[in-house]
Length: 187
Image 1 (cartoon, rainbow, N blue to C red):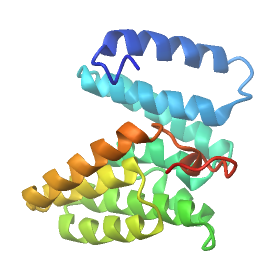
Image 2: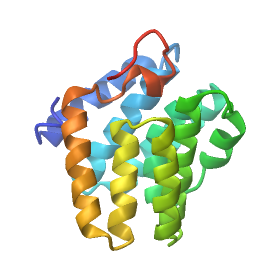
Image 3: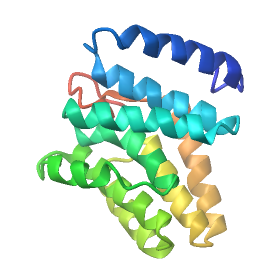
């Protein structure tokens, strides 16, 4: 909540503490990856890009060694792509099952993020739109809005970002469908 309410220093402290609790036994890799991605976001917000990249690198390593699903890799890989690092996209592509809409959506959104990082904004818009045909979750909508913005389609980007914020208010930050938990589904 601290991050959402603009209290980045408090969020950084809480997330750092939570991550320290995971490290001794590494029994909950999914939660650790998620928390490291959230910590990286807070660090980026306060201008600590190097520290954020360290958190993302650790999350990426954990995600690869624990064989997390593409949806979980999305949290970290999206931020890495925006920093110009492709590290998790190839792994997500290999892990994606054609029959799993959530995995398809996450992997397509990662492809769009990488296309943006490599200066192919119009292609990223198309790829993000394809991801949204599988699932229309806030993080995927954010990628679409970002692609539209980078492609110079500002009115569409603004409308998509507004839609994303409205949807996010009604949906958990990391919904079950992105984490791979099929017992609970977001709206």
